[in-house]
Length: 301
Image (cartoon, rainbow, N blue to C red; front, side, top):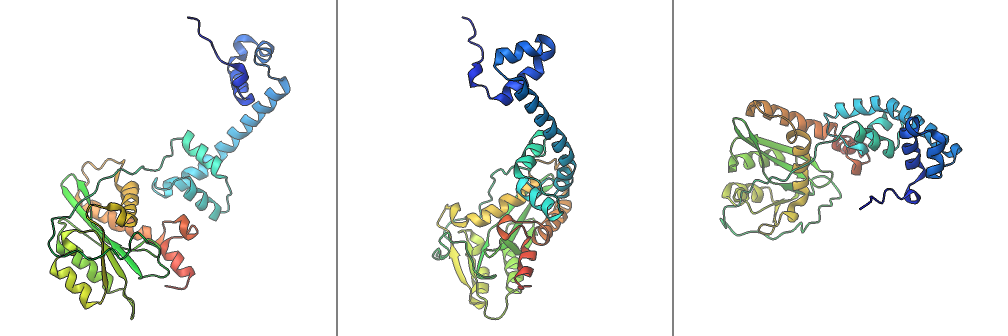
């Protein structure tokens, strides 16, 4: 059966221009223009526009590459655009997306991998006070926490942060080789040390055993903080914390060769990343500012 070929009427003028430009040396310009019903003036206009775009993209590439590498390949086109705008270079999102796509500048993509600390009903679960409302009007109003793991060549590391719903900042964290009560209790002690008089945040967790042992409960009660827990096996109830873990692993852990990277080496990297997250990583929902800069803009620190 004969191939029906291309429906010329369905082609846009830009597509026709690309076809003519690719085949003109073989078949002749006039013949191709007539066959595709493309006016000569339109062909030259589109060709010039394409050349101008290529020159503009080539000039933009250097700035985009510098910003992308400075973020350690963590920023997508929106944050790249914000960085360049802050430097006085205004490029459209369309241009930045095209330049990044055509030059393989892709930010790391997240994969799901969740550590579960659920070990059954050790003590009664408390109600879900947060109820998926992660909005907070001020710092230290609502806190979220959980544990995530990082498998490495010589074992695993576990991260236990305390996330402030006000701006998504990890107010403190602990990193250890065992996902035990000591890891979370040390983190809670650090978090409590940052509270000011009268601040009593709701602290939301999953139903993991660490948050149901006497040590955690006593610390919470002594500080007069309210406990909140997700429903059993319901990760959306703590989705803001899950989202934070996704960002960390997407930007620091996934899509890189970790062969030979030891726990001690990665622990140093993770601490440095979390410091960078607080001080320098821009967040579009905060007006393109880092959590620390956002708080400074509100005279909170």
